[in-house]
Image 1: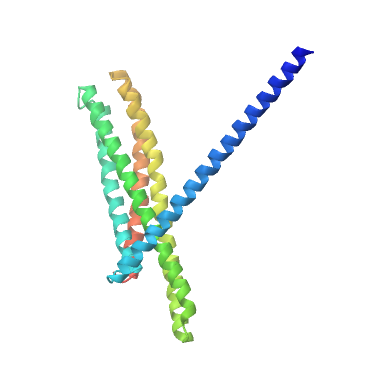
Image 2: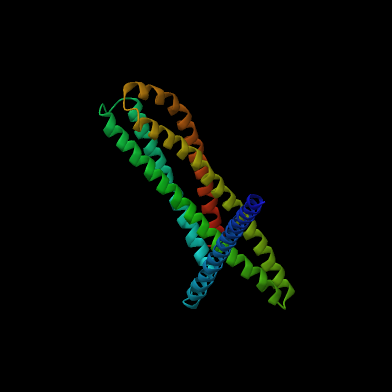
Length: 241
């Protein structure tokens, strides 16, 4: 009888502990969600404050958008050159132009890390373009309701639609080029890691089979970046910059 009572008490304590763990886990998840939402709201408020401050000195959202599109375009051009450089280094490794395999690995590893940085820079620049474009188009859309003159409102609405459509086309091409970088980076990383732990001629032979595939992927990436750069230039021209 005493044993049964003790077992019941133990079971109840265990259930209480499990319940407390579940509650604690739930509270942790909720806390993280609240933190993420707070960060998002804070960033949004910071952006709004920045745009308001810039407008007070005569720099409007339209100007900031053009400037950021130029920045995103330039970062993609820089990334193109970096990926080309990394491919050249990869080729020199498999051609055994540098017989010091440790040194060859270190050079290729640096090229890979530089590619990562270039890709991150592209993503950051595109995110900034999106941030200011949302603020610009929201403001523009709201101000359409302030017109008394129907003809002026119609003209502004037409310009709004055209600009937003071209912007979306440009952004789509930017994101497509951005997404094309990730598979290339994964392939580079795999080969760099493989070389790191296999500094011998046999390993070089294994990497040779990867070069053709990587070269094709980089060619595709560069074409997509060129398309995004062309779309960026057209959008900048359309904005009258």
